[in-house]
Length: 315
Figure (spheres, rainbow, N blue to C red):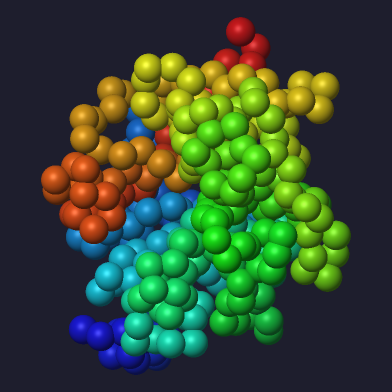
């Protein structure tokens, strides 16, 4: 199925759903029973299907859910909305004007007012030229997400990769980049929001978190009191958490997900629910394992109770 047919079919499905019962929900998590200390597949048949799905996030008011699904080689952000106590069936958001070309829209992060989304993007033209990813922005106007545009310099660049954007409470963003001047292959930066869609020069967040290794896949809390990133600080894979003390990030601490990590699966896309109760993460399997996204055969989203993660700060 090509991209145009896919979106037309979704429009037809949306019309049909108006007369169908939406997803029932008695809580903020798409009607799902919360997990305990062992990770649990999130929203089977709603978010997790036979397709490849990754990076589930919510807006701060728990009225909109976002995740990415791979469709015919394109990474497409989908969303579901809580309306009159029920969640709508997930639908794709068109971020690029060219619906037929392969594109990337992944790793969404939503501002506190719920009206602006930042994400890692590659438009069809850039993807056909094997260009590196940039940071994109979409605005929600009159209840509809608009076509996205690339965030201008000094955030996005022509020569370097920018990825994993995370917007915090004051509108500033964290992201990773392989631009010069870092401590390693790819570092985490913070750019202060100046208003009217503009950002100050990005600042490297420091050697306590960034190293000679490849820092990636990071979540930062809205109040910037902690961040969770891929663990490159000990021999274990998985994730690590850093708490900010005296306005300085501390060396990240590895934490156990509650079950052994599965060999040859990549764990990424850390995310904490807006109420700090549940930790979400994604995992991907590729065949062969070293083939990356080109060989991806499965992508899944999990969640787990986050209480043990925050116990690390008290130890």
